Image 1 (tube, rainbow, N blue to C red):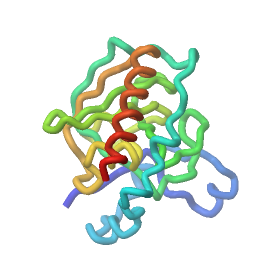
Image 2 (cartoon, rainbow, N blue to C red):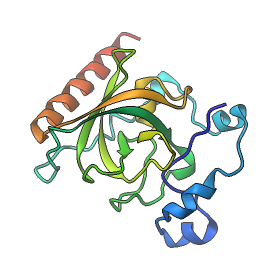
Image 3 (tube, one colour):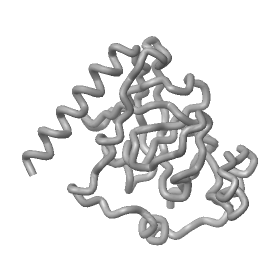
Length: 188
């Protein structure tokens, strides 16, 4: 059984009303009780081909995006979704499980990286907008949309390569990703 741990604890009534970000201490207790495999998947949105709006929500890359072109890392990725949807991230943005974003422990907030699965040809460009993951052995937490594009929404975790992108590389990669997605959508 795989356990998925996100970057923050699911919202409580007080936190949700105040819109407060949660502490990392709370994240460790968020998943103290294991959920069954079926119950975790039942809470996720349907994966219909026509419902994928994640690329429509892709953020334009501007001159304020940090340049992390020399960064490379390999490790395990996990993902987080519905339980954290709408919560404030470390960057101050609201987490959107359908946007192409990720949490990383050390990369600058606002940086863009290409995350690829070595065993497949799948890759995605994500914006770092949160801190984490807090689960041992993980190097990046992807949004549900990014995990879905990589095909790891059911597996929960996968070995990935993370490649930092300069602003110019991020713009080109994002344009390539949007073009590839629109082409594959017309083939259905």
